[in-house]
Image (cartoon, rainbow, N blue to C red; front, side):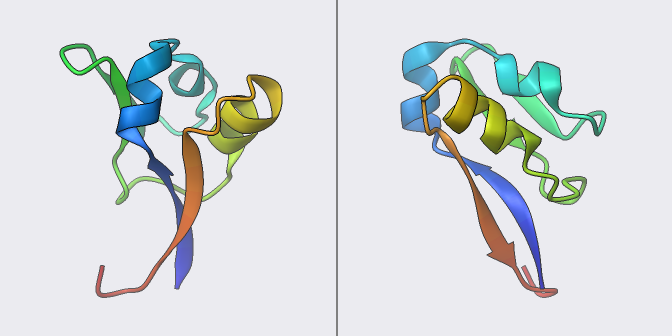
Length: 74
């Protein structure tokens, strides 16, 4: 079991800021979908560092990303 980031797309689309994507240290993990105006996570690449949660929740006070537990079967 391990943690990965999960984006609340409905909340994220309200802001259209892309800051979490800029701060993610793992390439091609936290991506931005221009047509939906929201970020999304490639869970197979996410290392669970939670920097995106810190940027979105603590710095920007938007609370669009959270860490969720994944099991090996997910």
